[in-house]
Figure 1 (tube, each protein chain N blue to C red):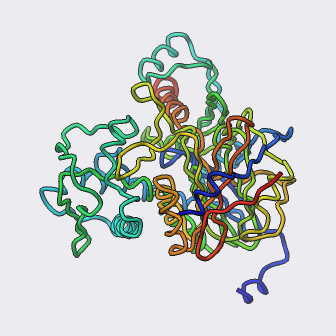
Figure 2 (cartoon, rainbow over the protein chains, first blue to last red; figure 1 turned 30 degrees about the horizontal axis):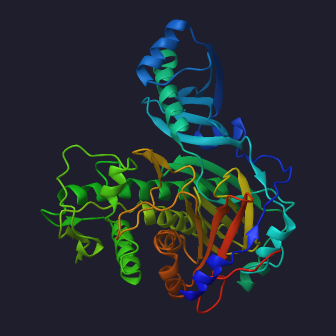
Figure 3 (tube, one colour; figure 1 turned 45 degrees about the vertical axis):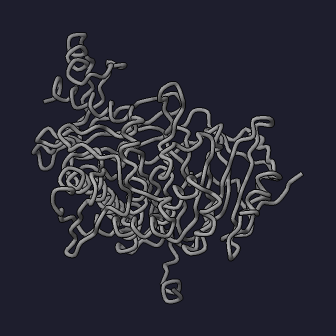
Length: 181
Length: 317
């Protein structure tokens, strides 16, 4: 107890100078990879680009309760041996700090089979590369040095809310019902 | 281990990484193995494990084990799945070891603050009782000895990560990592840098340690905080006072498994001084960050890997 009190009074102060490292971004899959993962048995994906009419747009907004920001719908009809396997829909959502490209697989029953993230990007992120900051944590559990030239892969700490994504999936389901079904 | 290393092929391993929205966050799973198809299959299996845990233990979903306990558990014992049972048992252990600093019965406070939904038709709570009144009976039956409501999301996320890692290992993956919004576990033979977010500037990423094997869980108020009666509050509730923790403190726990790390973050948030005595018992290390308003920097408190653990730090000029 006394130790904690002591350190509370004399804390080490670390001023992390943000370097000009790029924002945190991960490319998980290409469209083709996602199609293969979400419809492993399908042998054909037929692209269907739809431009929503105002009427369709209103219908989707009413059904999902989510605003439609783009009129372009990017969808692929998956099939296996000529038989319909479902729809693969590509979409993106963005929040204050993040930008997410994702795909939704809709089965022949009209239900969501899977949601996969293709790309996740934080728009203002940066890695702190201050040498003193690095020295603070060197060699305590595993390796001896922090090699900061690698990509950032492991962030322990809350990710951004999934709300935009949940809304996006709702919007796509309504879009499927309005124009693809 | 040596046999495994010797038999390792010389060609490059296939590495895949995917992410799905699960557990109310983005869950990222990466693995490397011999063939890309096998790796993708292993990752799909690992996601299925996370989804299964989510369905069993979600507070939000009305037909989860947890909701069945909350609805019927006071009137009669409720039989739960073995995973739910394991998590409730573990929760009891963490509560006992921390003298109640970890407590799954703070759910009503979370509902009041708006972090958890209200369920229509669930019985009224008495406002009395704590973790000791969640009674585990033989044959995986659970009974509430008070009119309580439980929420295991402070531990089930870590458990889901552990299950996903087990699925990757069962599938013969050489290395892998599972990250469920900060509850993270890795395995394999190369060290990976773990970053945490600056508690006051969460888009800034701070590298804090290299980890080869094991888990780390971080909890903090950023991105989770909300306004309640004009005040910013976090979903980190002190079980004794039922007061929400400070918005601007981040706690990271390093441990062998992610469920332990997840649970201990709550204990350290509730009472860093008392928590530190518990860390050695679970072979865990804690790193706590607090923003310093004057400089824009961080105060760092670290228990390091000392036995017995104490809070310490190195002074940097």
